[in-house]
Image (cartoon, rainbow, N blue to C red; front, side, top):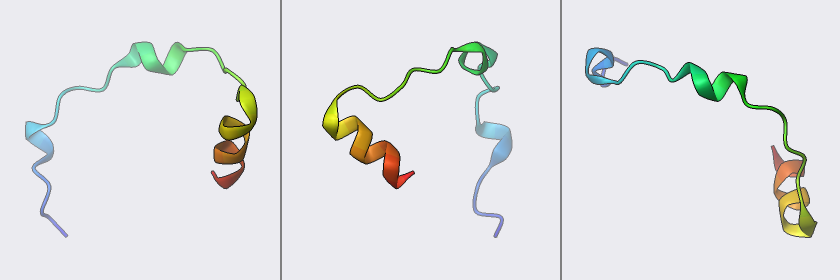
Length: 36
């Protein structure tokens, strides 16, 4: 819809793409992960 100024956003941080998977720990995290 054109309401976002994409030029004002910072460049993507590639270091987050290289992070390893971390499984949910605890009952609350497991419930939240099940939602997504």
